[in-house]
Image (cartoon, rainbow, N blue to C red):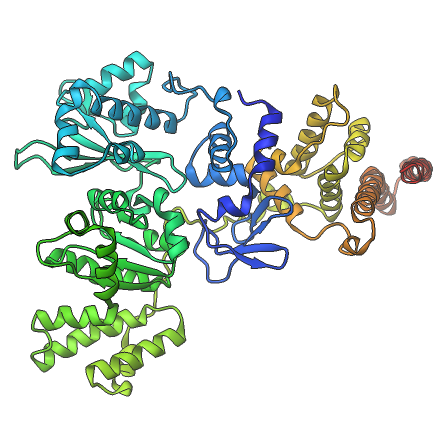
Length: 632
């Protein structure tokens, strides 16, 4: 278990802007940063990151939190694993608190621990006596260095039906979890399970944050009926249409050079990285998808296709051009010499020659399309040429930016010697662009009208109360101390508001042995029990402070702390008085309708008592609040 003070230290050392930049293209916006939401498809950025408060809020979906909750969301990991990932990214060593690799198969252990265990098993096997065949293939045949074997975690699955299964049993890993992750396959006839990967070189596939999410395996068998490559089956951890092989190692170089080299295979990526071309990535056994293009767009606006020059490779690049353009990414194409792929070319020519060749021979996407249609004879006859031009017009129509569409239209008019007006007519005939949205990119769900969830709205009073409470922790525990001592008097109707208050009071009481301990609200957000509470708290904190004028004060921190306390106490008073006022209103309305004299007299007496209680409570609270404020 990771101690609370260690979690606080990791969170405080982590730069949320730096870490979220691995997943999003953040742009400065005043004191904050903005980005397109990673949770939904949108044209206007609604995802806000506050570097001051180290939190984020997605206003299109309502999701919010801190760096831990974001990593949990994107990497599909547990809270301790998110802390571990953030710690590694921030250069904080917490290994002594995270020794969980020995037995990841217990039911409470996460899937990521099991995948990590499997990757290490495959790698150990490669380097053992059982891995001779795999090691010989990678080193002798493919020229992979020891350093690259380690950095990419390459492994080997021996020609055995139960090598992984036996090792998993020894480690206490549940077979059901292995089956869920695609590491073992069920034999329904024999009611048994066997290893999915056998006699294959193993390529672990990593998320952008460096977590193992699945595997690719290249067979060493010569049997033509055996698939050459086999990937993990689709599961909640492994969705190959949403992954780019090598991105975890390439993302910084892609961002630095503003160019991604997009290749076809695992070995192409490995060979390029080994040669020093570290901006290379590949789709995981699929043609490029819209989701992968969306991921690339977070890091760069320029992608260089280097696929095989055979018909299948050209077809993939033609469709990939459309996909990239639709996501606002400019594609270029490099055709390598006949018989070459990136792996063979870079090994023979070296890094510098490879980069010189790709720089000199890169084609703009329109030039590539023209070459493909010309080579296939589509420009030889008017009808075929018209159809080819129609395809190119469809490509241009996918570009979201109107000015870019116009510029590409003008450029193509000159290249094809076809009037701009004629091409513009073809553009008009193209179907309207469809917005890309995956099932994971959810639209905020509205509660049915009349439901309890729809009716339960956060009141302005609760909002003011919570905002002041959360902001106050930046300046000490005065407000939390007061809230804890008067908890019995506080009634918050909204369930998420109650959860936040209860959590913060509990944390204050847990720190009772050290009353000066600073409770880090940005860390606490990820520890709230429900997503509703996390989203509510992050939304309150991302808004402007209680008073936007406090920054102008000469002693800003002290003044803001005082304003937080004042706002909290004022909200506290109103929360106490509100039930009394509501009861008085209800009784007054009942008296207005009452026809029985005896019952009317009872109601009049209750109103009298309520008035007295309200006056006394108001006076007592006023005196108490004045005393607290004047003592600060």
